[in-house]
Length: 152
Length: 390
Image (cartoon, rainbow over all chains, first blue to last red; front, side, top):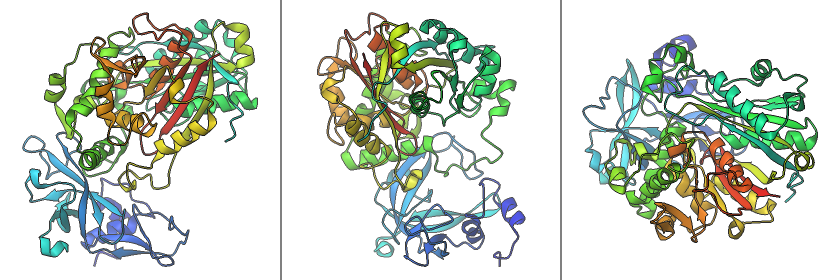
């Protein structure tokens, strides 16, 4: 299990993010292909990106909680240029960047991309589900179009 | 709502280098000095009169202590470097003068193209230091510049907006910039040009995004009491505020119907004796075209989703830009989209130019008394101000 890797190794595995004590659980989860979103032990509300306390009730008792990975596209743009990634070639196709509203809570969102889907089908409102790709040698959470049944 | 600063602080001097895609071998500090000296001379004061310095924390910018050292300004009792976007600095300067922290302030803003937004800047060895940091993000990182495009997608989805609605913002700014000698981009623009412009992040194209420039703006502020003694045309800050909501992480904003701009609008309205019917010049931020559409709607010029139609209905074909009710121009200086990406100091400067009557004749609003500035975007830099001619 990757849960036990030390902080220095964790930082080395994700050179493209600034990891701190508030967000380390999120990225440790990625190494296990788990999307862990902070959930408050006291009021039960999720929040993202990870903060040291619950923004609703100020409890510092938070549990990074695996979410279902199901949601709908809330925002969608298509980058023709931008930051580099080994799996992104702006010369071949615009790269979709989508903000997904997760099914666990209204307004709880995670920004990533949608893979294996024609660009014209990536529209606001479509159901998606979590899947994983490799990015710089570490798992990276992305989404794919969900079947109607799975999205129900 | 309490507003003790009302009309108590005035802008009495302006200086600007003008804006270009490349200021050549002038450093940020050189540009800041050029604008600042021009502002001090414009105010008709000397450096000994200045005891406050307010900078703006732009990447590669010039700290207030460095400006004091460079301009030889001594015995400073207030200096600060607020977060970038102009009215953070204005609010700080007004509060400092009103509270007595100092009496007369030099407030300046410098802008330079940076390696991340300009290819030529990326090859300039003197600009290498201004990289964003050691962490290179991936394409999926939500950040303010991409987030405006993301929320533009939502705006289009919710209100069935046409690209032409965004295009009118770009056309308005370009036509107006042609009447501003300080502007970087003055080549005429047609709707076809807009629709065929290079897409950067769909749904937004190059012409929806402000233009990186080199240049600087500077302002002299003092008490209204002193302003009356040194100038015949002081422009006062009637009300000024910033606005923030809790869920301001770019992708967590609940929706477009309540964010920082709404806090600004509610506060400004409550603090002011004047409102839209009294406005002679309207200066909405246009770092991205979607922000301008947001200000038009959120200030109450029209209903949500109607800003594009509003621009069309108030379009003046002869000017090539909008004139609200046939008399109120929108960013007569050309805004960030065409004058250059000044992050609001251009809007503030234009408010003063119009109110004191020093704008060029072809863009001057005759006898303008009130200017409304809606500055900044949706997430964490929404701001607003109403300026008046005394």
